[in-house]
Amino acid sequence: FLDPKDEGCVVDVHHFNSGAQTVLAYATVNGFLVGWDLRSNSNAWTLRHDLRLGLITSFAVDMH
Image (tube, rainbow, N blue to C red; front, side):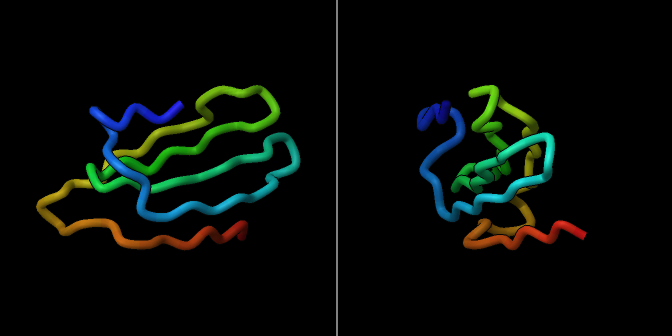
C-alpha cells in the first residue's frame, strides 16, 4: 500500500480493468505513478517521474 513518507500524498486516482488485472492507478506528489492490482492485492507496476519536469497534478488512462 501507499507509503506517504516515501511516495507522498496522492494527487489523482483512476481505476481500469485490463482483463487479467483490475488496477487502481494513482499519482503522488513525489513523482510516483503506481498501479495496484485489486485482484491480487499487490503492486502491479511503479513508474517514477522526474520532479525536475514539474509536479504531477493529474493523469489519464488510455487502454488502447
